[in-house]
Image 1 (cartoon, rainbow, N blue to C red):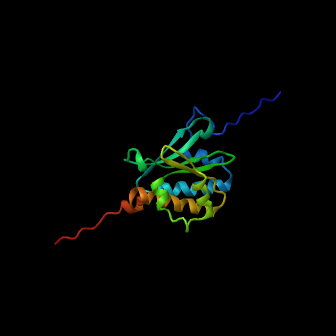
Image 2 (cartoon, rainbow, N blue to C red):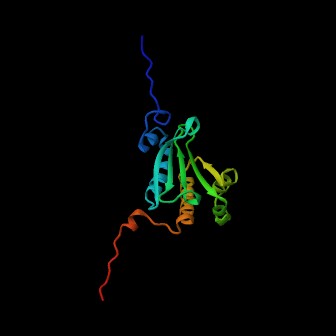
Image 3 (cartoon, helix red, strand yellow):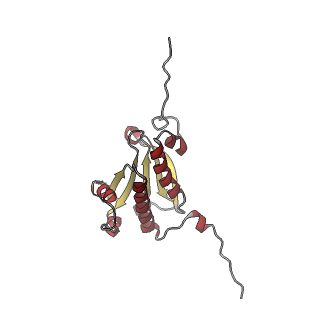
Length: 170
């Protein structure tokens, strides 16, 4: 008699908090690359931090990127990544104010359709995408850059903020 081997996926394991790497390792190779690129981009931004949150049966373990030192308003959440094995989701909450500033004619259909089909709740449009191709990931990174710039005012990366300025003596 053989015992059934129960291999649990870290994404569904409620009582054991996984790492970001654990969550990405179970995705398909192209999904690992796509979500890895977005996570790498967000990790490089100065004003952002992330946490892993359990969001119940629908999203389960979710990677939440948020703005540091900002309470509520536009400065709250930057993005949520739901590493569902079947259809991983990148969710970017967008305010009406931000949506009005987007260059709609220059944006691709992939991004426009995601925003148009988003549900609006608590003053935010919860736009969701499942990037399957590298260029779709690039489009989402561009949207994340625009949102970051809208909230912070400029795109500062961690590497540029650590540089020290040389002062000249008179």
